[in-house]
Image (cartoon, rainbow, N blue to C red; front, side, top):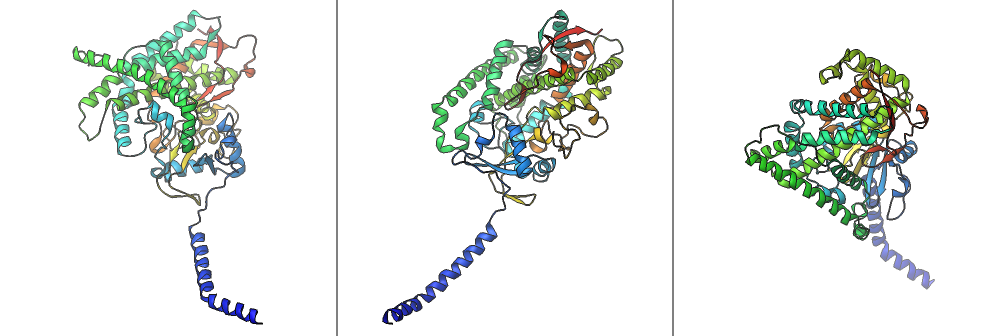
Amino acid sequence: MAIFSSLQTSLLSLFPLIILMYFFRIKWISFNSKNKKNLPPSPWKLPIIGNFHQLGSSPNRSLQVLSQKYGPIMLLHFGSVPTLIASSAEAARDIMKVHDLSFSSRPSLTIPNILLYGSKDIGFAPYGEYWRQLKSIVVVHLLSKPRVRSFRQVREKEISHMIGVLQENCGSLVDMGSLLVSHTNNIVCRVTIGRAYDGLKLVDLLSKFINMLSVFSVGSYIPWLSWVDRLSGLEGNAKKVAKEFDEFLEDVIEEHLKKRGAGDANEGQDLVDILLDVQRDNTIDFDFSKDTLKAVILDIFAAGTDTIFTSLQWTISELIKHPRVMKTLQQEVTEIAKGRSMIMEEELEKSQYLKAVIKESLRLHPPAPLLLPRKSTQDVKLNGYDIPTGTQVIINAWAIGRDPVTWDDPEEFMPERFLNNSIEYNGLNFEWLPFGAGRRGCPGIQFTMVLVELALANLVYKFDFTLPHGIKNEELDMTEKIGITLRMKSSLMVIPSPRL
């Protein structure tokens, strides 16, 4: 009894403390319930690496499969970086239109920082005054309609050259992929630096640059393991490529400055000339340094060359695989040409089926299957979910283009689906995002599409293409090679024959 009495006395003496602790516990539970985030659904993850093991060799396809289980808005963790994956038109619209400002920045990534002078380009620069001023300069001075039209002769001359190469090799096996790379590289070089360059050397350097942008950097997602990038040689290789390109660009700029010193700067201005003029006449509060100029040139080389040639190769491959579509397109361009040796740019507006063919190809094979990652700059409520500040955002444009909710028979190549709708390249149709949308949408659409349309129209007008070694059209290898852009794994090999 004495023990019980002592225990009772002790409990009574502790009663106020127990009540106080209970009160704080209730408050803590209440506080947590009010502040608990309603995060999007997530697949299970592993320690340290998070969900990286679930991406596989084709992240666009793997993420599509995951979205079918977890929904069009899901949260993955790449290392220590929470990453929102959007896989529907509705989710893309919310991110790139409704909350565009909140999702307009970029994450800081190791390799782009090395290759692009601290990400001073348009593609990877974080959102802010620097990026806004730079985009304004590029859109107004480099990619406006008048500027794009001014390079018409360059495009037509290079297309005539490509046609000539094919005519010389009619009946023989031609590496169409390599020819399209050379063609695109020549145009981008002449428009950007005023002349064709050592083709193989520059193509090789561009290939290294683009491949390096596609390589996974451990330090970007698991900062405390950043030493792995140094130990593996990744950072060293990136710095080597950056140094090679920097030396090339230094020579280009020096060549242009000498030309200006000789008094012929206004003769046949290219994009480097224009950028040097902008730099010299800078009337805005903007630090247009040499590194900024180089970063912009790199954007034009990398994005322009890769986007154009991959789009052309995929489209020609789809046409070969679908003879009915090829025949319909050839009938259209033949009627437009009216017997002339070549289709000119002003005639492209009449080519409605041509435009539909290209749009359908871009639906199935968007140049960037996973749009460049964005980063939220503030807390956002997205479709009922809480998206915290600092969340990385990836939009699966490849999956959106094949979404059966939006598209009938989404895996089928049917250009006719684009003949009776208003879908255009203006970034207002979120079920079709080959060039993104919103503030971070691609500013070079006009430059890209006039070149793709002109080249494709003339190629199918002048030639028929068959596959080598008795391969049937439907057996054409369309295997993807995923990177920052979506390429065909195997270069397109064809045997051209004249139509006219």
